[in-house]
Structures are given as structure tokens and as C-alpha cells.
Length: 318
Image (cartoon, rainbow, N blue to C red):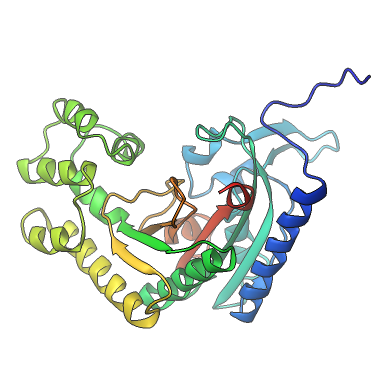
């Protein structure tokens, strides 16, 4: 009997499970190709600075770094594929003004996922570059809805928020954005109130943050708070309201689009619109997406960028 122990958080796929994964992967690939998106296949290893550019510490804590025995210096196993796509677009595809790409491959986390205990994911997603505002957002949101439908999820819902709203509410705070996002994502008024006791934010901002924690920050709430907090809040709220209205007109009946200003991204490189996808029977988000223009600027090519991704393994288990 072999004495080689399995690696904690990693698993093999074979038989029926491998077949089901490949079947869904190919169905999604066909849908993306029909929508005009081309496939890109990055390597599983990358230089650490390429993964961290525009993402800061949010990815570095989940990145496994090692010294290459072939003298290429430090290399890293990717914990997320979006920075790799950004690197490719900023370098090897720099002559293209508009790019629509899709991908599917394994990633590895340095630490187990809190919810699943797994360190491996089969990340699949799409990225759209060069289309500003609602034009690119609508196309990506449509494909997110199509992806869930292709996988057989029923009653798909996309909850849409905006990082500009959160940033406007915490302006002047001594705590980091990461701290606030963690608090908001808990939807726990008690935890949020305990932290607010340590801050010196305006009463309007505090009340708004409490609304986020209680799940009350919908479209009506946004409209009611315009003109009460700050110009930055108003700008982000107007952009979000316009986007959701545009999406609802262009993809009627395909997916429910709802505003929830408390939506937070999986990784904090998003700087504009963000969204999460849910469906009947799914207690947790099925996918995450949003705008990440600042990551592209960090890679040396300042251009609009928006996309979404999900873990294909998790979809098979949902």
C-alpha cells in the first residue's frame, strides 16, 4: 500500500465527476464563442509581480511563491486568473483596442477556502476590455446570466453594487478598505456597530453603513440618500442606477437584476461596478464580477476592463 498521503485541500477528478466537469466546460465554451469571446490559456505559473499588479495584498496572501530550479527567479502558482489576462492584454495583445476573452483552468490557493475547505478551484470566466461604462457592463452581465442558465440554475438573480458607494461612505476612516469590506460582507449590524464606535464618521455615513449591514440598500434606498452624504456617493449611485436600468431593458426576462449596495467583490481589485450571482437552491454566491480598470493601469495599459468568474467545481456541487 502506498504511504504517499494526499495533500490537504486538493483532490483528484476521475470517472463521472471528470466527465461532468468537461461537459459543462465545453458547453460554456461554446456559449462564449458564440457571443464573440475568444479563448485564452495562460500558464499555471506567473511572476509574482504580474499577479500582484493592481491587486495589492489582496492576492498575495493566497499566492504560493517558489524559487525556479531553472533559474527563472521567483515564480508563483496563480490563485486567480484575471491578473494573468490583464498582463496578456497589456503586453502580447496591446495592438487590439477592444478584446473579448474567456478562459477556464485550475488555480490553487495558499490557504483553504473558508467555506469549502478546498485549496483548488477550476476558475472559469470572461473578461471584456476597451468598452466603457454600460456598454461593456451589459455584455458581461448578460454572459453571467447565460452562464448560470447553461449550467441549469433556475431563477437566476444578479445583485449589483458599486465600490464607489462603499468608498464614499468610509471616506475619512482609519480602517482599511479590506476591513470595511469584511464587515459589510457579514451582514451583521452588531459587528458593524461595534466598529463604528471606534470611528469618527458623519452620522449620515454611519446610518448608511448600517443600512448596508441590514440588507436594506436597494434602489429606493439609493434614490432616497442622494444629496445627503457626498458628491462621490451621488456620482456612484447615479452610475449604478443608470446601469441597472440599462441592463434590465437589454436583457429582459433572462435574469433578475437587483441593486444591493452591500455587494462586495471576491478580491479587492475591483474599483467600480461589482456584482454577484445567485440562483434557487444556492446559499452562496455562484459567481463574482465587476470593473477593474485600475488593474489595467497598473499593468501599464490604461483601459476599461470588466469581467466575472466562478469555480466550476463549486457549480457541480451546488
